[in-house]
Amino acid sequence: MTVTLANHGTSAWDIDATRLGTQDPPDRDSEFFVDGDWLAPNRATAIDATAAPQATGTFTFQIRGPDVALPQVYDEAFQLVEAGDGASTNDAWFGPIFHLVIQVVPADPMVPPSDGGCSTRVGQAGSAA
Image (cartoon, rainbow, N blue to C red; front, side, top):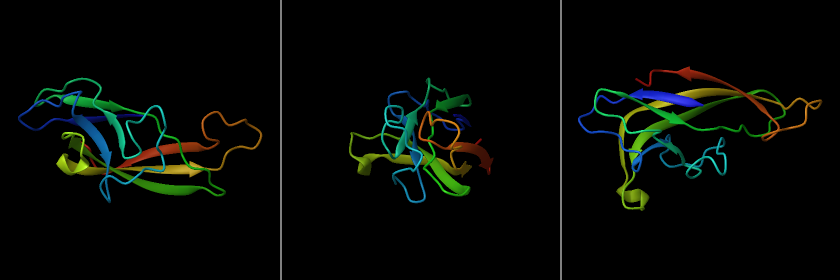
């Protein structure tokens, strides 16, 4: 999944500090966490490359839906965060919270699971720019 956001601020978004973190509530573990791809269960990814002010930045990460018996819709909230000194209490959240509305459907029993045994469909609610 790739999320593209506009940097309307006055400083660059840096690959070493600018992250996409979970919200509502902040820093909660996501049910869509992919071990080995996400930075942590509450941090999907860092920005792909530095984004100067008035430019756009992309954030690329994988999602894996939980196993479900019936189709289920999830509302996954994210916000940008500047990583502090390693303690989440020193992180600085900024920009709007945006939502990804994700429908998770049961795995097809005739198809071997390749990444968690479910299928996800993603739609975006609201504006991320």
